[in-house]
Length: 327
Image (cartoon, rainbow, N blue to C red; front, top):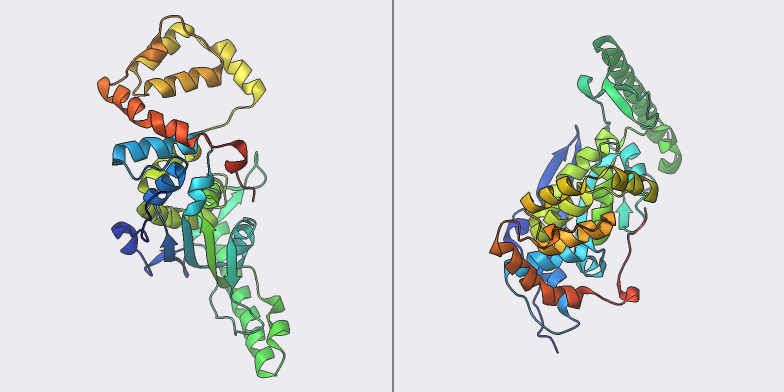
């Protein structure tokens, strides 16, 4: 039986609790609470064979292995609760991530505040030409000024009507129905780290709308504080990694120069195990043993040896391995 572990406290994360991170003109993200951290991920992964926390270097190797091989269940042991204030149009994109739990302010029970999102001139964008889903270039000064003036005027007018409805005794649930998507709303949002990584992978991407990317940036700062090793692996394998289709991979194979690939591997800092994984992904075999080099020397071999037992422990049965969550 494994020894118990008290509630994990991360000083860097504790310093951020209840601190508002301003986003856009009236919004914010606040870390209300967290449960677990890197140590919880490691403990959950090692429970199958009963060893406790090891060194930071070995923990880093294990967490990296888990994430790049999509053994996601241990990451679900880490929980975040956020208090978020955002425009309604951002919230409508946000709640597409259905693996979270949330409670949003209700316009039936509360009077909505006179707070609307108004973009700054350089945030007024023209419609994308190749990707019709996104805004692209900054609009001209004249177009931006007219757009902002019209948005402000409409917001003021609609809110005056909303206040007049309330003064006349119209029910709040009906008085609110003309309020625009630029109105700010608030919610408490709780999610586990595995699904939070999925959220951040999508919302930090340049294809995402700028306004929700701004919230993703603030949340990433908090996640990095709670579990820096896990966030490091997320950046390496998810945020800055890419997935290739079978057809794309075949094109790449045809274009590869084995000698140049071998030289690049020899010069790279990748450990031996990572080199072998890369060659397996590419479906390429090299004759000169480049995959068995030690990169930056014995340190990489030691890293491989330190992580080897944990790789075996992390190789959970298929039913215990959580796949990517959809949103």
